[in-house]
Length: 273
Image (tube, rainbow, N blue to C red; front, side, top):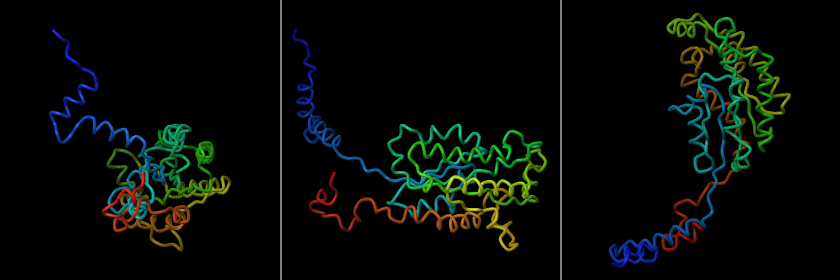
């Protein structure tokens, strides 16, 4: 008995005969052609922070606002890590933006938004608390790492922790079986250090703590639970941060042609590979 022919040629011929409209041979050549097509690289704006960043992609969040503004120009990448402080952030950053990544040259901006957990009171919440001097050094180290992987300081923007509404946040703490674990005055000291570190690193900074309380205005409406941003707080961040971010992304081109500019008879001429 003759052994069945399992050669690639025989299989292609057999499948082509059994399935007239779709041959393996045609699919093979299609895959080979596709393998030669150049990938389209979307630039990136990376949001690196704690829960205030993680939650920014919720409806009407400041991150989703940017993603909408920058659609077809770049990807807005959310790397918010709820509960994290700058010590933990430095531990994971090399795995988020690494030396091996070929995308680093396409990073348009990195937003660094930490401090709301670092400023937790040491005697009440030692797990998240980071001493002020270390907080400062940790922020500098983030910029140093970014520089080492090709992300220049002029692409980095710091955001200070926002002010804290102690009355509302205390209620949240009590519901979780804890006493008040943060103070607005302490958050202010961390905000000052963040501004200081930004100056030393040569990066822009959005001093949220100061801006939200400017001229004695009532800032409590910017916070949903005393710590995290409300809808109006998200709008506030989006508006003020965009003023710093816009110059870094305004020259990014619209990726791929407008659909009305694609030749329907010869789309390949409008969409070259």
